[in-house]
Length: 173
Image (tube, rainbow, N blue to C red; front, side, top):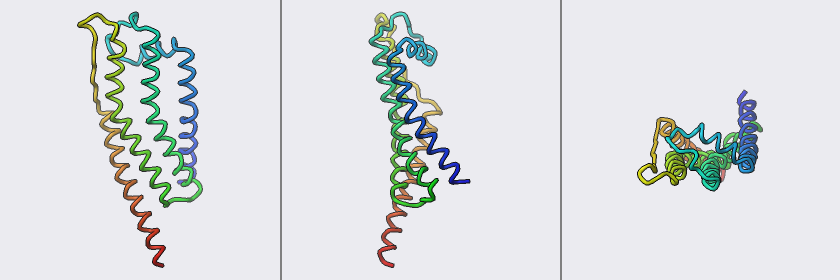
């Protein structure tokens, strides 16, 4: 059962790593669709009629940078789960890849509030003086992701050290 779940996770990570950039490219070409999605997703009192096409492209780039942290993390998560599906459980490569996943998850958790703040600043820059905004939001979702990333980071670091000890022990035998 573990091999089956590992294979499913590996395939899901691969699909996400492939489809999200393709979707992002589609939204770059159809910036109107991106703008309508952003208008629904951003819960700020923005004067949408003042947002220029250039601002939408900048927001697209900012969002792509933010999403890239998660995509790189999923790339590193895919590799150990592909190995788990093949029966390769405890090796240094898996441990390092899990650590890299946790680092990128941690970075994305920290970047979430920054992304929201820069989004509010970017979308309100055309507002009259006194109506521009810089919103900062840190919620339980971000805190949960950061906590989970820290736990995974510690566990993956322990796995890296364990695989190093195992390879040292093999040299003595």
